[in-house]
Length: 577
Ligand SMILES: [Zn+2]
Image (tube, rainbow, N blue to C red; front, side, top):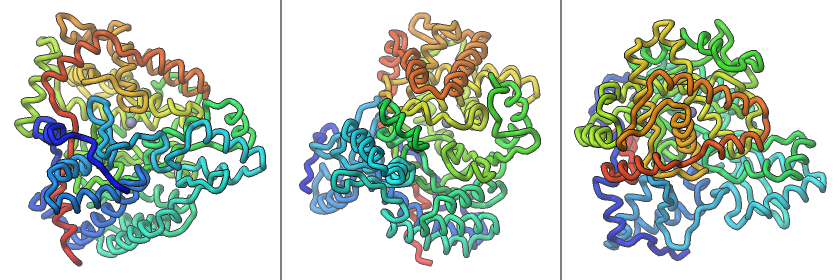
């Protein structure tokens, strides 16, 4: 492959300048959190960090077939002194690939003549939606049910085979990488001082080297039980990257055939790896919400129409606050942002069918950027868009409280069948988590989790953060729902724009959120693709107010991308043990 640079040197320099590319620093090698670990855990950490680097390779292969080749090209051209290569490599590392999206929802394409595809590298690059559907229909009509089930599984890479397609299990397609990861995890398990953590790592080793989804389920189940361990390690399998699988729901003939053969199409797992050290005091703060979950469950709309994941007295949810050492692959690719917390496994995962619970992991270094530059950026932003009377309620810590609610509401509400909503399922699920976190705030205040004052801080901070620098694309589940909520809140009197700035009608925010939550749960219960589509499109309205505020945000905040710096991980990787 002959590569050419797609961005001019001027644009590359602009995009990598300190106003545009925001650094996020994970743990340093002289950090107290690392230094106070037991020697065994320090050694285990070396192997976990190495496993993460291998996981990143898997992600890059899933993302674009040319990522690794392009990376090599950039390294060798940089050595020859090319300026373009040097700056392109900085952006390539930040977004972990040739194509990524920036904070204005524009594709940043680093190599000329490359285009983003719905199926990423999970599917053949030249496969169109029409051809994809046609092949699947033909295969089903020819009795190839198991083959189609395999193609639409969340753990296969799909390749062409003659006139047909074929799904290859990750454990086979990524055999080399998975075996290497397994070796690292075996060593980490050997040195780790925590029995439960080691047992999980060994279960993960099994799942990586043998082709059996149930082994992943067993590993997930052990992982989700981890609460009091010194270290954190996750192989995450999020499903936002693949936009092709979900399209099968939109083809009526195909959808009916799939239903007839009881095939559930599941978006592909995008591999990410997280390595960290558990923060004890942050964790104990987060755990407090556990006592309130049953009350939240009781107050969910239509709660007589589905079974709650958290039944009374038997709450399987674990929660940890983590100081991050490494984020790689899907976890660390900065594409419009990095997640501040995750609640896994997702609904489609087998572990939930064998009695496994969920685990929430909160990312400390992502949520708490207290550098002077970050504080100055925040104040400029508030001055530009929020009415002065509300500044006193804006509190970044309140965003963390909101997030705790969000992650926990993922465990409430309908927990099966939402795949029927196809490409809209994630937008709707994220919307549910947000609205639940706001709608149930009075329940939390009533039971003493937060004060009235803290409630106001959560509401004002949440509403202010709904406004974005640019209209997102429909593919950005995490942003689309913010536009929907912004539109909904403006129309339900929860806020208004006065003299170009946000005025929050504090009393109306919770009722508006409850009303939206009820509509969302109703859509989820319907398992009706058309209804889900209509709900998203009716609310995904980028109004005039949003456009005005976005222009102001663009003026005060020039950032386009971010990049993760991992000094401790970079140091550990050089150690040979
Ligand atoms: Zn979420």
